[in-house]
Structure formats: structure tokens, C-alpha cells
Amino acid sequence: MLKLAGSITELLSKQFKYFWIVLTVVLLSIALYLNWHYSDKRAYKSLNAVALKVSNNVDGFIEDLFQDVYTLPIYGDKIPKCEGGLLPYLQRITLNNTRITGLIISNNNHKLICSTIPTKDALISNVTYPRSLTGPFKLRLFDQPVYLVQQKMGKYYIGMIIVSSVLENVLHSPLNITDSVALHNQITKQNIIRIEQRPEKPGWRFSTDLELLSPTKTESMFAEDALQSIDGVQVVVFENHSTLLVRLWLSQALLTFLFLLGSWLLFLLLRNVIAKRYSLHTALKIALKNNEFFPAYQPVYDVQRKHYSGVEVLLRWQGSSDEIIMPDLFIEEAEATGLIVPITLQIMNTAFSEFQTLFKIYPDFHLAFNLAASHFRDRSFFDEFKQLTKRYQILPKQVILEVTERDLLDKNEAIFNNRMHELREAGYSLAVDDYGTGHASISYLQNFPFNYLKIDKLFVQAIGTKAITESLNDAIIHMAKNLNLHVIAEGVETAEQVNYLAENGVRFLQGWYFSKALSIKKLNLLLKEKQNDLIL
Image (tube, rainbow, N blue to C red; front, side, top):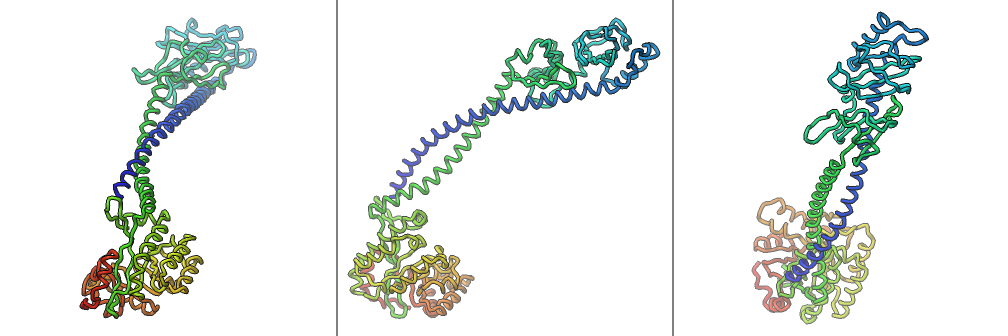
């Protein structure tokens, strides 16, 4: 059967692997598509944030430039002359504000009135807007391009000369996601200034190509935000298409790696779960269908009468290859899936059939069966159990039903309590199995109508070891006597254990000292021998 279970596991694992590969490919394709779609949106959102940030920086820069200019005495029809009047004002402003290289005042006819730079180098814009930004210009006094920021104040225009390096610092992108930042004139459809960074040379630099990368003529992704301080001018932030693709592909590659890694780990986990649970479940169902479960009988010895008084019916599984599979390998799965109920009925059917003759010879002999909470919750189990006892003419006194303490029944649940009282009233005996290894309490024993208590072998085998579990035997035995419970000690393997238990009034003993679990044939031979040959 283990070979069958192995082949089933292998088949399921193979099918699950193909399913998982297809599922992974489909989900990965969806994930990559969504990542590409949302990466593009995130990139555009980030560019918009950069454009807004740079736009705010430029607006703040422009407004700061005009703070001192607003104090110039140029309002009214008459203004001071340049020499000795306006010029000292202009010189003081350029001296105190290092970002202003020169100041120029002109009238409505764009005629020069006063300038901090030589007259022939003075810049006067013909633009009639209240405020404008023009350039770049090349003047012999400067080694870099300059720009003219001009504002109308009354009947005059105030122009400020700004070198390109100052304006470049204001335009620097606060995030390293852009390839180019420009101030774009929406009227002339040209860039006023553009700075860029290239992979081969780190850092931002001034670009002389003002026609390139305009928002109306580009293959790059761009975002724009209009300046509040100057009409008709907007900040445009660009990201090169190849740069976008590289980032997107890197993102896709990382996502693919993480997705495949996660898929592989999850596949291993689920495959192990399927191999452990589903394949065993299938094997149990096949074994049940093929009647591969059979009983083995562990004799119980009556110390007082010095003969065997009954057996505990133990579950065994014989596969198609004749290997015997012990319950430890499958009982948990059987109980979890509810298959323990039909398995138990199959074992009962076999045991009742094999004991028909023995019960006629030993009418006081008993069979003890292990039950779990799932037996009590099953609606049909006890009806089928009673039908089996009627079919094989089994008397209630010949059956002990053992409830394992690890399956502690809820004493407040009526179905458990009522069913157990019904069984006791019908004449069946009830035993609490493996007592001391779970969490049953005295109130638990008092609430349910048990008449047998089985001491777990953990305590029995501690006899003579002076371990703390040895001292618990006296307490358990004493408690059982006070509750009028018959005590059965299991796991008895030595004469010392037999003597100790007998001296302390434990009447029923089972374990390898007396016999291992036997087939019905070997049990018959054992019972025919003189049962009083054991020297206690």
C-alpha cells in the first residue's frame, strides 16, 4: 500500500506540477502587464510631481528677484536721473543680490534710461507683457549665456540680467528620474533654457539645443506645469524613452524573479501538503474499499482471576504488497477526514465475526474498541454499530468503548453526554483511554459515565525509575478507586511493574509482559494454554 500511496503521490505531484506551471505563466503574464501599465502611470505621476516642484522653485526665485526692485523710485511721470539718482539704487541691489548680474531700466518705448552695465551691452526686450523671461543672450562681458527677466512698473520696464548658471540651479530636478528640464515659451514654441544629464557624463549641464525636446515635438515622456510668475512660460520635465524602457525592463525582470521564486516556494509547500494529505486520503479510501484494514488483539490479563478477561482491538492496515502499516502513520489523517468512522465499522465487523465462536466458550470475555470524538458526531455510526452487534449476537457486556483523552469530548455538548448515557444504560462499558496524557479533569470523569480508566504506559513504565511520573500512579489509582472506576494499566513490560500494580489494587493489566497484539488464530492458542502459568 505504501508503494500504491507512493505512486498516487507521484501521479498527483506530476499533475499538480503541470497545473502549477500553467497557472504561474498565466498569473505572471497578468502581473507583468499590470506592472508595465502601472509603472508607466507611476513614472508619469512622478514626472508631474517633479514639474510642479520645479515650477514652484522658479516662481519663488522670480518673486524673490523683484523684492528689492519694488523699492525703486520709478513711479510717476518724473523719475530721478540715472547718474547720482537711480544708478546707486541699481548698484546696491546688484551688490546685495548675487543672483542678479545687472539691472536695466527702460521706458514704454523701450528706450534705455539707466543700466548697471555699459550702454552698448544693455538688454531691452521688445516684449510688452507685464512680466517676461527672454534669452539666451550672449554678451561680451560674460562667459556664459544670460537671460533677461523684465517687468513693467508703471510707465517703465525693469530688466534683470541673470546668468545661465543661476537659472540652471533653480531648474535642477529634485528627483533623479529626469533626463532634461526646460523652461518653454508657449508663444514662440521654443525652449528658453534647457538643462540635461547624460549617462556618459554625470550631473546636469546647460544645453544649447533649444529646439530639441519641446513638448510638442518629442518621443520622450514629459510633464509640464505653467509658471504663475510669468505668463506664457511653463516648466517641462522630460524622461528619455530609452531610459524609461530600461527602468521598465529592470522592473519587469525583478518582478519575474520574485514572482517565480515565490511561486516555486509556494509550489514546494503545496506539493508537500498534497503529498501528505490528499494522497494519503486517497490511499485510505482505496484501502477501505479493498477491505485492507484488519484487527489485532492485545490481551488484557485479570490479576484477581488469573486469566485473560478480554482484548483491546487494535487497528492494522495490510497493503497489497503484504506490508503491515501501523496506525501512527495514518490515524491522524483518518480522524481528520472522517474516514475513521467507516474504518472502525470495518474493524468491528471483522472482530465480531472472528469472536463468535470464542464468545460461546468465554461469554464473559470482552472486546475493547477505540473511539474518537468524530464517532460521536457521526449521525449513523452508532446505528450501524448496533446493527453489527445484532447480526453477530454480541452482548453489550462483551464490548468496552474506549474514548482517548486527547479527543476530550465537550462535557457541555448534549450529543456527547446523551449518547454516552444511552450506551451505559444499554449495558456497554465506557473507558477513558491514555489517562494522564491529555487534559481530562476529575469533573470530566464525574460528568461522563465511565466505568473504566486506562493508565497510559508513560506512567506505568516509570515504575521503579523514581521519576515524578512514578508518583503520579498512586494518585491516579487512588482517584479511580474513589470514583468507582476499574483500572486498566497498559504498557506493562516487567515483573516489577506487574507486582507494583497488583499490590496497589490494579486488577487489569495489558502489555508485552503478557502478550503482544495477536491475530485471532494466535489468540485462540494463547487462550487454550493454562492461563495461570504466569508467576506473579
